[in-house]
Amino acid sequence: MCESKSATEFIARDEMNKTRSNKPVFTREDLERLHAPAPADVKAFLDEPYRIAPAKIDEYQEKGYVRLEGIISGAPLEYYRELIGLAVGHRFMDDHRELADKRVYEQSFLQAFNLWPHYPAIAEFVQCFRFADVARRMLAVDGVNLWFDQALYKEPGGRITDYHVDAAFWPVRPAAKTTTIWMALVDVPRERGCMAFATGSHKLSPEAEFVDIFNAQEEIALGENIRDYPWEWAPLNQGDCTFHSGLVYHRAGANETDTMREAMTIAYMTADAVFDWPDSNPEAGRRHGFATSGLTRGDRLESRFAPRLL
Ligand SMILES: O=C(O)CCC(=O)C(=O)O
Image (cartoon, rainbow, N blue to C red):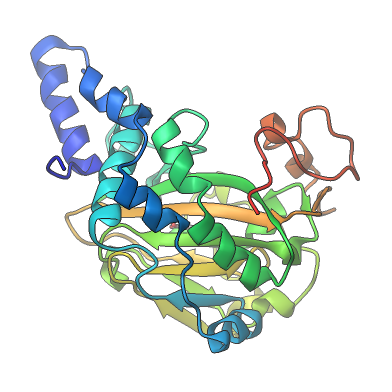
């Protein structure tokens, strides 16, 4: 296996290329890797179920999130860390802005949304049995559809991620039957920007409250409804993950280290989810239009870009 190349390294190399020729170079070999099928041992790992103690499922349902150790490890971890790093580097190769020149929202992370439709090697990972099966068990449903994936790379010096509830951004109902895996591709201690969850806040309301993090000008102060909740920080070792409910309030710390916080996320919904949105954010009906094209409010949400996984 080739030496692992993180997005930080890729972007640094890209900067070198740019200085030399004023044109970023993404090698043919890099692109080929993003289109190549996984080696047999890596593929076998993706098909292997992850053993979860029933207490972990109870914890998810009680707190709205749960931490799981070693969802990925060894060669598969190195393999996908490198591929996801390459894909993030590819997405951002024409973005040469300094952190301080970006919009406040963009200073929280490099957000590489829906890598799977563009890079077949990542599609295998995003659609795999191993993670979808855990999602199905957390949601206590018979089947799950993919909603989307996104890599969230918090740059060194990257600001906090403002508190919010995911389901308010999504035209997916019931919100309680959505969940996201947040996977640490490197160690993510608190100082590298780990996640924090308001435990139990997913029970506040079946309708998600819209917090407009996209237009923040500074850190958004916690709302009164959520201020007194027990917030728990969730530092993770490389290869660990959290699953969090689409209804749980959460945020993340700043990256105070000098290395990238590399995280990969995949969002899932119950297979009988419906295309619908919260009254607090009618705009959600227009977001993710590629996945809901041709659907009318109230239709079952399944499409080429929101496929059934299990
Ligand atoms: O990674 C982050 O900083 C925030 C992630 C998040 O909000 C999410 O995955 O729902």
